[in-house]
Image 1 (tube, one colour):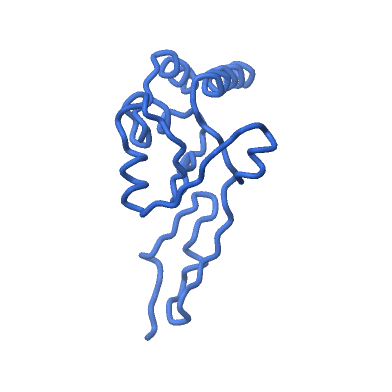
Image 2 (image 1 turned 90 degrees about the vertical axis):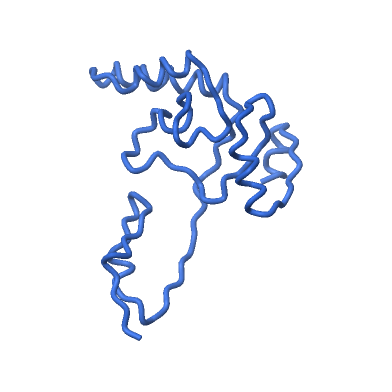
Length: 145
């Protein structure tokens, strides 16, 4: 990733940290002390997959770990939830994304494919996994051991 970014003119210093340090840095409340932080668990727009940014970039939102706050962004996010024609909704989403690209220090990276291994005596894992939501439902698993 560092080499790919260097080709784009982005210079980064990668630093391995203990998990508790990463969580502490990711949850800093001062956006002026921003640093690149890869959230090891990833982040998606689930469960509704409507990419308005409300849960991620809204002032005070649950996943706004860096304390980002912008009245312009809040207004643009609010507009993405309003009903309208397909072209109106697209225009609102485009406006939100254009502001995010301009105002936020975010580098989007593709979702990393993962591999999970499950013990042979745990049954129902595959049928209970929802790949759209990326969620497991262990209450549907059975164990024969």
